[in-house]
Length: 352
Image (tube, rainbow, N blue to C red; front, side):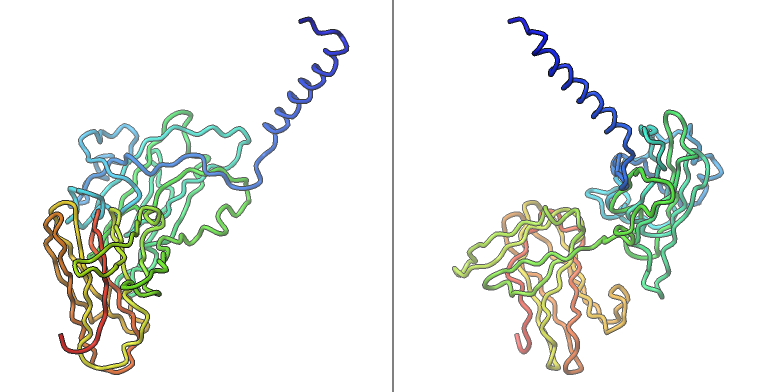
C-alpha cells in the first residue's frame, strides 16, 4: 500500500516531534540524585594483623590481590555466611575495581558507603579521599551505622578505578563494611542525601500475630533482610497453634515483650528453635538499664543450643530481677541464625 503525500505530512511531523522530544529528554539534567551503580558484591578482602600492607602498595591499582578472599560489602566480615574470617579482629583491607560510569550531564560522582563498622580509611586510585570513625566502647561505638560519602569526580580515571579501604576493627563485636556501597550522580552544590544520612541501618519489623506470639513483640533485622523473614502459623506437638518465624542469614534480634518487669525474682524466657541442618545457635540476652548501651549492659545472659535437623529444641534463659518495676529493655541477640525457625516465645515470672 502506497502512502499519499497527505498521509506522509502528519507522519513526518510525528517523527520530527518524537526526535525533538527524545533530544530534549536527553539534554535535561536530572534534578534529583541518581544511584547509578551498586558496588555491593565481589570485594577482595585480606586481614593485615601486622599492619604491613600499606608499605607494600596495597592502595595502588596494580597491586596483586588475586589470592585474597572474596566478600561482599553488605555485612561485616565476621557475619557473612561461612566466613573464613569469622573470628578475626584487627586491621583488614578491602579492594574493589569498577569502571568509570557514564556521566552525560557532567554531574558530580559520589562514592556512598551505607556503613563502616570500625575505623575506615578510603583510597581511590592510590589517593586517600577520606575516612570515617567509629567511637569507642565508652561512647557506644557511635558511628558504626552512619552512612558517609565522598565526591570522587576529579579523581576518576578514564576507564578503570580501584577502591581500597582499610578497616581497623573494634575490639569486640563485628566490624567491616556493611549495608552496601554505591555510586551516585548529583548536581554540584546539591545536598545529595537529605533523607538518607544517617543511614537507617536497623529497621523494625513487627508481626501482628495471634496466639502464642504476643502482639507487640518486635523483631529487628537489617533492612535488606526484612523481605526474607517468613512467618507461618504451625501446630505444636500438643496441638496448639504457634507462629513460626524463619530467619534469613545474618544476625537478627528479638525484643521479647514490652511488658514492664513489675516483680522481683526470676523471669523465664524460652523459645523453640528448629533448623534444617546441623548447627549451633548462640544467643545472648541483654538487659540494659536506661541510658546504658545494649552491648555494654552489665546484665547479660548467654547460652548455646545445638540443633539436630528436624528436631525442635528449646532455648531457655533465666533473667533475675532484683528491683521491682524495671523497664523491660530485654534484647535477644541471635548470632548468625541462617535458616533458623523460631516459634512459641514466652516470658513468664515465677517458679519453673
